[in-house]
Length: 208
Ligand SMILES: C[S@@+](CC[C@H](N)C(=O)[O-])C[C@H]1O[C@@H](n2cnc3c(N)ncnc32)[C@H](O)[C@@H]1O
Image 1: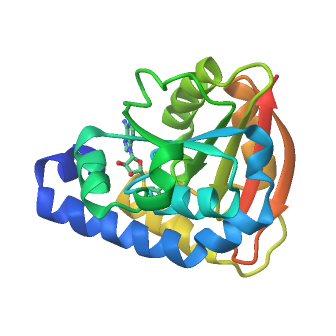
Image 2 (image 1 turned 180 degrees about the vertical axis):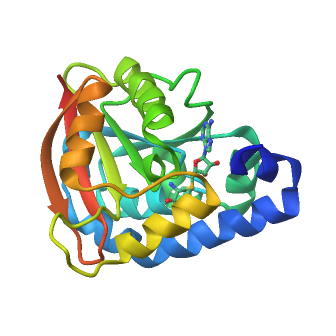
C-alpha cells in the first residue's frame, strides 16, 4: 500500500501529515513567493498543494494572480476547514479535486508542484509529468519546487531528504541534470532554475 493510500484510510494521521507540510510550506512560502515572478503566468494551479498555505503566500505576494488549489478530495476538505485561501484571497481562488495520475485540470497557464515529484520514483514521476504536459498550455509553464541535490560532493538538506524519501515513499531527491532528463521524458524542456532564500529551488519547465 502506498503512503497516500494509507493516509486516505487513516484520517487522523492524514491531518497530522497535512499539518506538517503546512508548517514546512508556511516557513518557506514567503521566500519562495518572493524569489520568482509567479504573477507573469496570470493563473497558477498548485497541484498536490495540500491545505493551500503555499498558494496563499504566492497569491499574497502577486496581487493580480488567480490561483487554483488541486489535491485529493480528503485533503481539500481539510483545506476548506483551514481557510488559508479565504478572506481577501477568496475572490481569486478556487479549489479542484484531482488525481494527478488520471487527469490534471486545464485552465491555468502556470502549474506549480512543491515537494510532489520527489515523492515518486522515476516511472511514477514521469506519469505525473505526462499528465502535467496535457494540462499546461503552449504558452504556459510547469514550476517544480524541490530541495534538489548538488552535483558536487557537498553537504545539503537534499541528501538527508533523499534518505527520508527512500524510506517513507520510495521517492528520491534529484540533481538538476536528473530533473532535466526526467522533465524531457514527460515532454518538457527545463528553462531555468531560480534559487530561493531557503534550500528550495524553483525549476521552470516549458512544453518541449
Ligand atoms: C509531500 S505533500 C506536498 C504538499 C504541498 N505541495 C506542500 O509542499 O506543502 C504531497 C501532496 O501530494 C498529494 N497527492 C498524493 N497523491 C496524489 C494524487 N494521486 N493526486 C493528487 N494529489 C496527490 C498529497 O495529498 C499531498 O498533499
